[in-house]
Length: 110
Length: 114
Image (cartoon, rainbow over all chains, first blue to last red; front, top):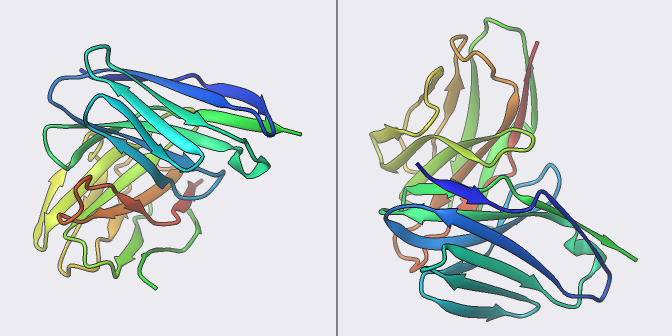
């Protein structure tokens, strides 16, 4: 089987930094993705990690440790528009086998 | 502008009726996918297609059917056999030329069956 776990909800303050964790158990690991999804809208791609380490893209960074089955998404200089759900997804074996976590709903407060 | 379109955004049907959700993409992507999203749960794969005239079942294909007659189009039919059809349905596509093969999602169709 495959488990992907992430916190259900988080709250942070505008201008601050927040880290959203994701742990997974899977065989045939072939990449980890983070998506952002605003309420009632489509998920949009944020980041991709397949090797261990940190990938930085502007205010967003994503980290992966394959040996620990662990990833995090780091959001810096939080803005109100960052309030959304953040989905962790793991790809197995081939490009079509993608499994999603339930998502972390982030609320940014003034 | 390239992208994925799904229509309509909201759809209401009576129990016992089949309903077809449309998904069109002009990204020239080979692979297309259908997911279902329920509150508090992750996206679950219904069907996917890697090339025209070929498709495979995902984790929750029962009660659904698809076709892939054109590269641009991947319609999903929710049949009366689907026991709990009310959900948010998302279509996605991906390209074999992208190193990460990330999936691009359409805006979704929220189906309510009463």
